[in-house]
Amino acid sequence: MRQSFDLLTTRLPLASQLSFGRPAPANTRWPLRVSYWAGRRQAARMQSTLVGNSGREYKRSQVLHPHPKTPSLDIHLAVLDNQFFILKPVSPSIFSHLLEFSKEFGDNPYLRTHVDYNDHESVVIYEGYTTDVLSLVKNYPPLPLKIHLDLKPDNVLANWHLDEEEKFHLGKVALGDLDIALKLEDEKPFNHRIGNVMWRSPEGQLGKGVGKHSEVFSFGLLCFYVITGVEWLHADFANLEVEPESVILFKLLSAFGPLPDELVKHVNDAESGELLRALWQAISEDETNETFDSWSSDTFPNLDNEAKRLILRMTNLDPAKRASMSDIMADTYWN
Image 1 (tube, rainbow, N blue to C red):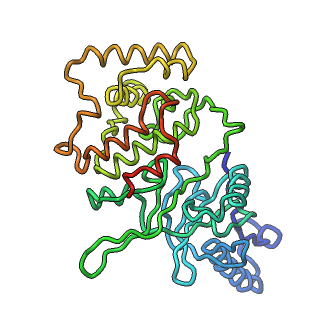
Image 2: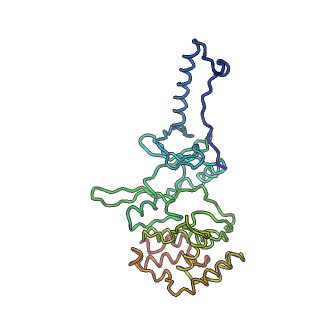
Image 3: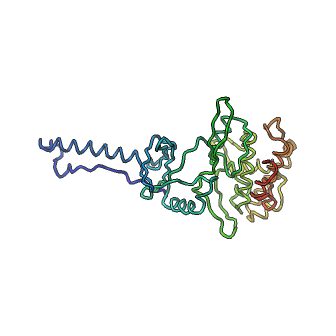
């Protein structure tokens, strides 16, 4: 449960000085009015600024992401010394998690960790970025970007600019949204669905046997999107009559099949195994299905043989046969 901010309120001793429906004595009206408006100005000033643990004051300029129910949980854009920052309120448990995360990974330039925080209001403060990769590819398709980070594209943040010749330049890139990042104990996989359905691995769709190999698969999907600019896993989620996980799982099996027994054994769940086999049975009976290795750049821009080779190393349906992230980073594709 997220923690709400303590809203600053100005309390005037009206009840002790005034009777309901009767005017205040003449000698009390003006001081009360001054106190009231002074309090309003002080409240507005304090609500529009946030003091970080560093002592710096961040002035809120606009709401970036309004919370649907609790305005105190709105994410704000703030300005300090002509630099933009993001003020993100979180729950106390997430706040403690992010502080611990920053202690361990704060020096990593490819992770967006907070640069300041306010512990009283459980707000973390991030450096502002120009955009995220999802928006970047949508606005400038298709860019020959080769991102060395994992997870979904709207969590990969980037600074970029166009020079006088309208040439694109990519600057700092970092992985954000670390609120739900976790550290596996003894490398043991866990059995939970986590993250956006469009970027999960097959076992991630089922919430069974999720681990580092699952993130490698997600990175493969991210690379496909960045290379081609095509959101091939996007579905009309609002009008689906079945769980979106089943729809995405069907598409993944269609592209990267056949279904290996190793995946069924890996998820180690009778209901999930039954679903996998039923989906693959339907796919195998469809003579029009085209697997990923037959896809071409005529339909998917920039999807040449080298790009397909790289992506297939990450999207093997057998989790044990996927390349490690370090192996992917050493792949000749990036040369």
